Image 1 (tube, rainbow, N blue to C red):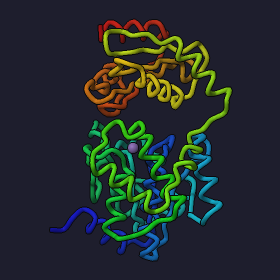
Image 2 (image 1 turned 90 degrees about the vertical axis):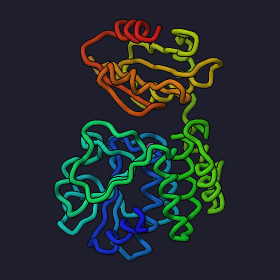
Image 3 (image 1 turned 135 degrees about the vertical axis):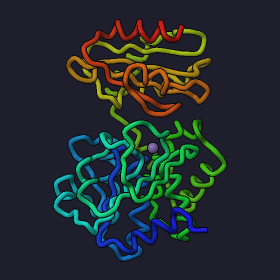
Image 4 (image 1 turned 45 degrees about the horizontal axis):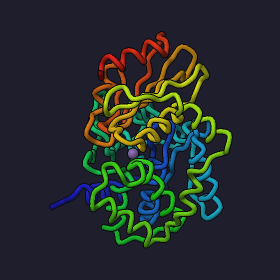
Length: 321
Ligand SMILES: [Mn+2]
């Protein structure tokens, strides 16, 4: 039987150059998976590049980039360089996302020879069409887990720093191996440990400055139970990063009895962001869809224009009471 990985390998061997791209606001899962895939492709002596975007970089990604560039050379390029480099013989591999509007450089898709998607999110609308190969496996915890399976098939070892970043990606997507975690997830984690993943360095990627940490704890104080198993946190009137809302929603899952959590706050002038998380029983994607958002069962978000924080709060309360 020809597997997905066999097909992908065939395409890698045929391509003149290979570009790896993930979603905007790249996270550690997308980045870790990119690095692991890069290692495989490099073994086939191919020109391979990873697209990164400095202006939308999370602290954890900046730290990971700093750690990795100290150890070895990867070809990181920005969107413009990617467009310059794209030819009809370029293979574009899209990781951790399958919606066109969410990828780092949407118009790159129309400027390459072939496109492959590897993702673990539930298929939504606006899936990138005309791909040459798809691997969207929603039972898997993270894109890193898929790439680890590929590395294992290739019997390939990776560098400790890459293993560390990949492990960090698995931690993010599983909320510390709590959500969507299966036997294979632990086996992938074990593979990364065998390759020298360092838990201390991994934690360093997640560390943040004291001010940010304390500010979040203060915001968390505003949270309250909407019903017997759902909690909501309404932030203040300042503008917050979307990733901050996500972190708050994630932290709320640590509270006793909580099955699902919601964080709402201003993410831009006139735009309210909602971030939702679930332990697995409650489908928060369904809730976010009602606000025009999306994501997956345990992890979803929405952006709402022209409404007040308290209006959104009441809407969520009424929906879930
Ligand atoms: Mn992911």
